[in-house]
Length: 626
View 1 (tube, rainbow, N blue to C red):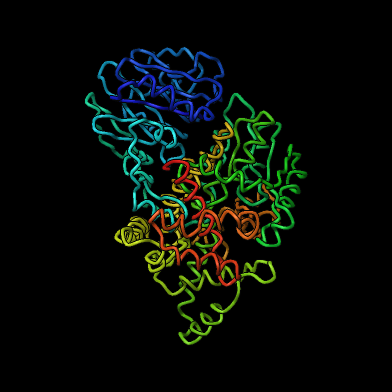
View 2 (cartoon, one colour):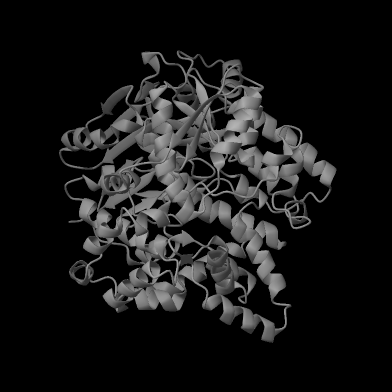
């Protein structure tokens, strides 16, 4: 896990590279390396995980080819053995050299052999071309900045922003998406001048710095597995191998442990393969639990840790959120209104203090096995339509009058009921989109000034196209959408930035090519059965975990945001979201925002996440634009 930067065609490239590379040194504190040929300039920030010897430092040059590589290829020893049989001689024990030699032997077809997470650039002195590629699911980031005949590529957006000639024009469509979802889906960024290399894509950069992006892999929705026994057997095989692959490391490996199904399963299966396992969980104060009604993850995590003799660590969320929020905004590159990144950063920071560079995460299980509450709620919404219209009307009126907070105590059931009613009578695709949208299209029009209104219909258009792209059954349609939308746009994004800010590599065994290919062949009826989400995964987990862990209520990996908005952040809300600031930005309607804040404070509406995103956006403008 590292950071990479490349410059093509810039004047004073050496000075620019040295300056901007410092901004992502946290991604690789073990070594900072530079290479250039007078026209192309590379830098690499190394976090040493495999082959700790300095011979594997990057940029790495061999046979007139130079590579900068971020990530891990878990099957590199198998590929290496195959290449050695072809007469290729290796000088290191690193996966970096294997990637370079695999490219040299297979060219772009090398991507068909890689199992892991990666983003890399290889410059070939012979052809004068560069080959750039990103892993199947976009676990590792890669940003591309274009300016006339110039190209800059990096692992983080904040690195590119420091280029002296950087174009800071705001992408209005992206900003609408960011407010609607609290994060940015797809391959655009908040700047019109920067794109992301899409997952499962590669590109060749020619001598004149032109390039074309091509896709090298996609999920196949054919040959669905409908047999329970076959599905269980096939998943068990690939997932056990995935756990084993994700433990390959020359440094100590630890694990997130929330006490929920996914992280517990990974931790227990990992412990069976290595002698000692250090685990980490988050806890919250009693005050925050009262307002937020947050789950008691620590109770379940401690129970499991004692059962399996983990070296367990519990970290209470008690940041000085007023001071830390600007730092978090800087860390994340773009305005992301989901506070889960705070948890990730705190855990990774604690892990690093204990000398752990690698953590396993249960991310991805909810996406591929239908584990989110909103997925389940969308199916219930489909059934809800069979309720007589008059009764639905009565329910809607009753719920609309219910407060979301009484005497400072949050009412989770009412919050959920209001959200459910907001999308329950829409068609399936629209219902699902609205289940994780924070505004309706009409509300977005009230929020944004007229200049932004033309981009609002694009949100539903793009979501509908993705939702209907593959799969016949409703369950897998939602899973496929989440893999390409939610997992990529939010979960992988904040996890990369937050973990790397603490110089820790997070590995995701559920987001493995073979695991996801197998999971997405499993019929939806085996993922949601008898009103049980993740049905097949839970049945598999019964071989490894106690039932009180497997079948506990779903708990989100969140933070006490409602407590913060009504408490510690309330003064910041008044200051940053003042009429003067909102009017000067000329993006939003101030009266609409004022009503959001007032209704939240009165307990009429639950607008905490909306307000939090408005705060992060204002802080982002101050950090990156002003």
